[in-house]
Amino acid sequence: MNTFSENGQVNLELLFQRASRYQAALIEIAKSNTELAGQYTMAMFGARSPADVMAVVSEYTKKGSDLFQQQTKELMELNADTVH
Image (cartoon, rainbow, N blue to C red; front, side, top):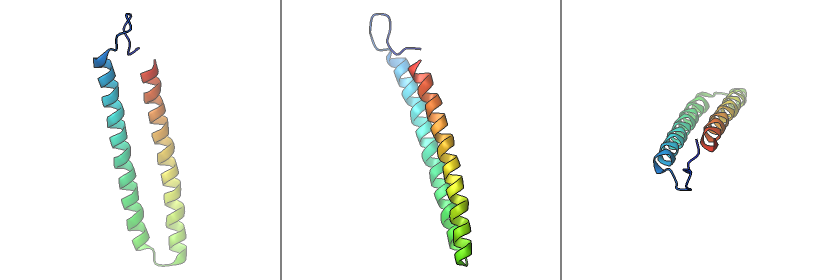
């Protein structure tokens, strides 16, 4: 749905609804990223050898990459809904 009415006026209610959904998505992303960072930190504190450190880095690099891809997809879908 377009944020502009037929006469060119901005549909503020729709605009605010979309902004609210986008804001909620960004807050959820921040929460997920913070949780992953905390898990990574705890895993690093538990590493007892260089091999453990490398395993933690590898594991959390993969998790971070997967999370980033998921978040990007969600934002792109949200943006696609906003544009149409």
